[in-house]
Length: 402
Image (tube, rainbow, N blue to C red; front, side, top):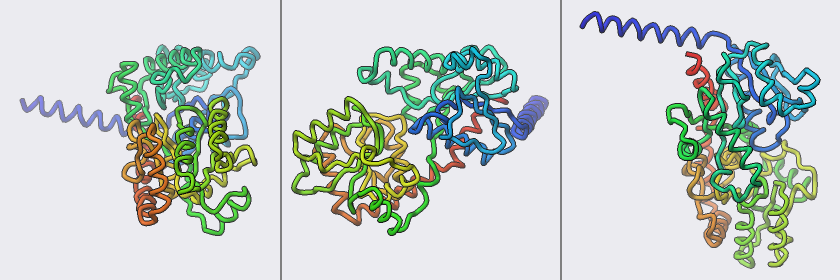
């Protein structure tokens, strides 16, 4: 019995020391950096923020960015290596290089861990010495396939299922996404780790009243406005906000500033606004000027509230940007929204126009409540710092290397 206790103690010490050694060893960590270089919105922001955070807090490791092409949208941290397709047929067939032939480059550069940042891993990774990690942002295309092209649904499903089946560890950006992975793809719970994301630290910088006034003057914005940030698609429910504006007509005529692009659904929203005679109440910022991301924190801070009554999200990064910006948030009940906004937001049924309108009027008229939302929002945002998010991902790396 005593010997068994000694053996267990020795074995425990061995594994503790082994983990300590592994944590100190410099790893070659590769990323699927396509979105970091090419995507200006959610997936791109996630990729850029995470890569920079890991490099800042864990500089002992070596970071490699594998991308079909490099664009000025992302400036890698000094010391990082960007790997592009070199062979002629690899450059001609970039999608094939990214999904298959990149394995040759991973071996050539002695990559220990390859992280697919947007629901994809190259074919053959499970049969190699390279450990695979994949970040799954959401499975919205499984919940609402009717809102997608059928070919896109098939493609997304094929890539996501393969990545989840062949990754050594799956990162879910929220508890909601973790549950969806278990429900739709039967991914074992022990292979999923929830690692919340952060946002650009620029949103935490407090701007002066003069800076915000200057931003508003530059873009021709009014003193007070509600704000919508995100793609103009059906799921994000801008039409629901438009209906709330119509319900508030004559009682609360604050304009809505929209920062986001769209196509068919955007035209549907515009048609509704015109029918109701309130088209002048919505300012389509992308259509009147070239908006600079550098002004986005001030745009948030100048708003009465962020309106985000989306039907479903994987995380909802504009909510976090608003919390860091000390901007009140009106968002939906259900989905991931409670995880992201905590006790700081005002929650509504996204399908209830009167509920959205009532929340808008409440935040605009009750200054004490709005100030409380700002304070609680900043406190809740501390859960999503760059350091905490990078540490969570690094723990996943260390886990699969043990």
